Image (cartoon, rainbow, N blue to C red; front, side, top):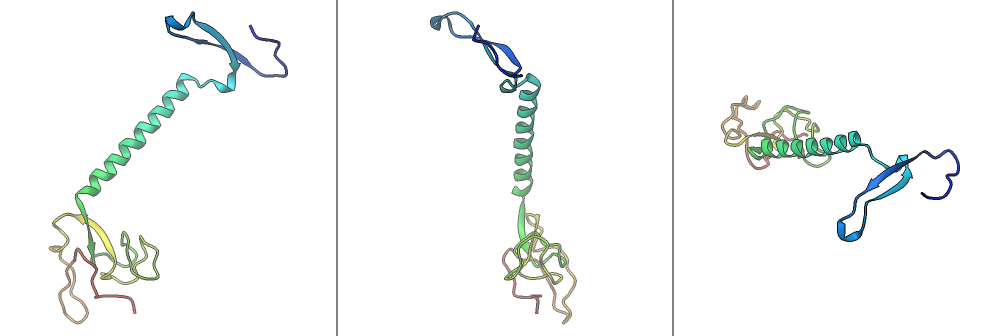
Length: 135
């Protein structure tokens, strides 16, 4: 064993295995705080796996989506709402041409939108539009 323990440290014995060519098993004493319980290790591993799966699911669902400009209502865009805006939820005009929303691939240019105030038909676009921009 090692020398005397000072203070109120809680020490635990931990068994360290070595390969036969390096000698016999050894027992070492370490402060309890330095040892991670099996429950903690399991929790850390489970959290890491869950995070990885969630990331894959998000990537997979977004893989079938495209950025569709000019189809979101004011404040409901996913991003890119032009100069002076920061991103998601910052469009200020319904169907703002420079604001996009993720939609399923193939649906952007075919979704039905209400006509503009001047009667012109609106449709989504895979590129930013020059219509319905804030004044």
